Image 1 (cartoon, rainbow, N blue to C red):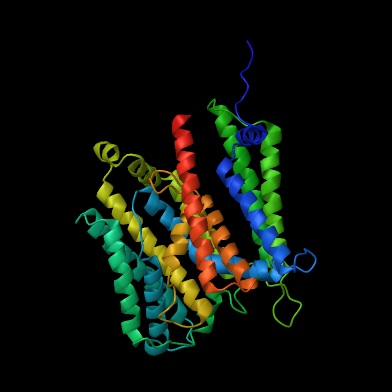
Image 2: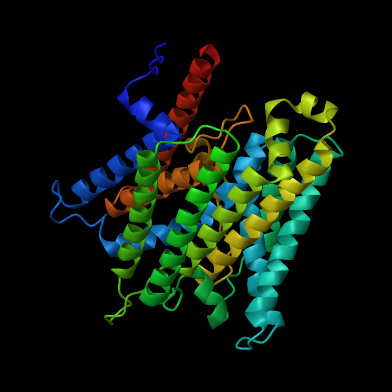
Length: 413
């Protein structure tokens, strides 16, 4: 008896063998092309003098994408569950302004506990507001589009009313580190320590998973494929740390290492990935997105899950608000303006279907990288803000169209 050949081209067959998501691989390829194009054009039509791929710009790019990236991981759950959240940018700005006012006008700047109290306060405010949105949507049955559109107006207005539009600064020096300022990174040594830990954990998890799958009789990847995936992952970790360590602190030869906002983004990504893949709550979210009525009839308390989803989104908005205000070293009324569009775009470009039920956390991070890279590259080229908006809008429409095409092909398969 002959073994049937796998369908598809060589790329598809290799992706299937390695058990990698073909869409994520395609996105990585697109990101690589974007980086190469911007490096070429910022070098005056040559690679030798390009500045996009210089360590300094890549370090700044990693920090820039942390604010949107944190919220994009939560937006995946929102959209997968067939909802939308238009209030994330305004909520980010409102929480950032509250923290600035508390630090500067209520607590004493310079005390050791100032920044810790304000961070905790921000997380609590985010959770409460997110839960409020969720309760109105789930229990009062008001569409999420309307609730969060109202939230967009309410929290932006609330940020302005707190100080009548006045910018509040400077903030606590310890708090500023959370934004990746001069001292907002962990240096070369600890960056390599974290890289070593990540590599060891990666190898252990890969072979533990392989052994468990073999014990339960599930299909196991060929050993060469397993080793290739591990090697590529290790190379990505090592390359990332090398780039982060290649950028020195201003006027010194001391490597900056991984920025604290990037560490926060990595931690949030890992936690959200675990929630999505290994918890009952994560399975409930995808079940609701796939078929809400079937999920309800199967015993899932969809109202509670919906409230929890928006509560998580509120906490993630608070984390992004902390990073943004710490990086700006001020509470400003305009902080987070139109961020909701970038967050939604990042999730959709990353493969999250607006029809619900489909989406991944790694995809959202890749989508964030694409959005941030486009914005960064266009700034380096001196493009106007209006032209940047046009390009990002075209990219968003193209991403949704590709998702529609993909869903149709999958339905015919």
